[in-house]
Image (tube, rainbow, N blue to C red; front, side):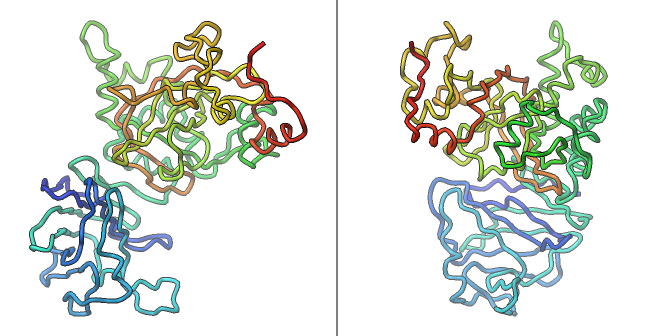
Length: 409
């Protein structure tokens, strides 16, 4: 298991992930990130393995076989760390003709047990991560002030069941049958022709099927998130027990809302994107914070505009401020009107959004993000058939002389 130790220090450069024992072609990895507002000059900084009798060290900018700092021309660009930038370090490999060529990598083995310190140019420790009993493929991720182990590159079922902070989520998925039906490697679900799922897969270029095996993206609420949800759902100040949670008639719908189609990495999802969940295609809105945070919103959905082109095109055509779009619910049934997500009228102020405490945990059939909120399914609005077309198909219609409909009479 990983030690729940993360040093508190003034520096904002921190360990984000360590993969001590590689597996399935994945090599040992150390990831650090500048979580501050200013760039950091890493010259003179080091990572020291303090768990071994001999001090194994890595120096930013280059070192030698004796673990001493030595400038290496290949590594000159590994000294300036911009805000929100990450450095991913792999084991040293000198052979420039090898696909594993890594002249700026670390020269020591991480191993079964270990402790790494990140030290600044004054040789002061600014962060530390420890782990014990690391299995191949087990990575430790920063989660607030702790480091938590997650099994990488296994199926989502295995990753969720083995995570020490996802116990309640795993029990709930198992009790509803979702864990095996959706998240077990190799299992496929059947969907109907012309269903929302069929239309979305066609739009993603994966049409012509009636079964889907993944990949999936799972927004997994932590145990702490579930405990807060159970408190909120209790009567007269009482908290639901786990047994009462598992007996909730709406539990399956809630869980399905946390599973979306495709493999959605945090860096590849644009701000204010709506991802289609397995709860009837209801949207989960994804937002990025100014400091690089990754959020999910469960009540920011596009009520489809009454036309043939949809909200994304109406936003592109700058129609968002027109009265028929901002109708305050008169026809849209939504207080923010039509196209609230695409038009940028949703925010993550207060507790409206869940934050991803850990994200981009890779699995063999998708990707896992750990969030600090249990989301309640957003309403689902069926789009008119013509709005399922790709942007290119819509543009082709416009180029052919058709006039875009704006919903106005």
